[in-house]
Image 1: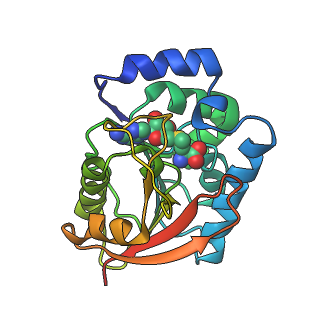
Image 2: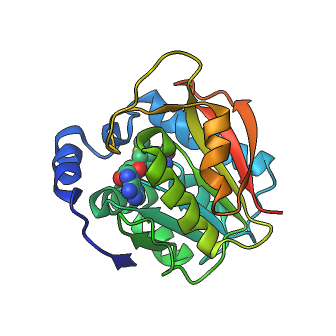
Length: 217
Ligand SMILES: C[S@@+](CC[C@H](N)C(=O)[O-])C[C@H]1O[C@@H](n2cnc3c(N)ncnc32)[C@H](O)[C@@H]1O
């Protein structure tokens, strides 16, 4: 695991302590299970198999990782986040240390969108409810970070809140405030780093997040 503490880690740590590792990522109770399983089933339907390498971009407290890690072959789960607190609580409370030891998930933790410490290239990536919290500049940085470790066949599935009404986004990325974008904006964010974009639309997300697919070839 490679770790680097970033500037707003303290605010997030306080939030995690106050709300708990499930509620902090926005889904206590039934939502926790539902959004975790939804991601797993969506990726399975898109062709994810145990021999594939999966990047869980902004993996948080392993709401989806707790399903992906036992399913994938050892060493094939790559978890990226800025919050060490969420990842540790996810491993301890959701995944369990036996699965951690058996499956050897890799974690890279920083707030700079720098994924270069991963030792494998992902076949698939999922970014669930992270672009919904980022400014355009940070989404571009995320996509550039993922492009730097992607293979030509890598497919990235990313959720977003569709903006089809007047809405002013916050000026700074924020783990708990929401950002809305059009599909055209989602497309434009990936152009510089070589991603094409397909607007998949609704995928049964309980909070109405849409799904998009970034691909290179
Ligand atoms: C709403 S949660 C979603 C977590 C996870 N994908 C899920 O479905 O449960 C957003 C996550 O993004 C992470 N995050 C926010 N800004 C980040 C950044 N700059 N770099 C890496 N992770 C970030 C937060 O720590 C949090 O885990």
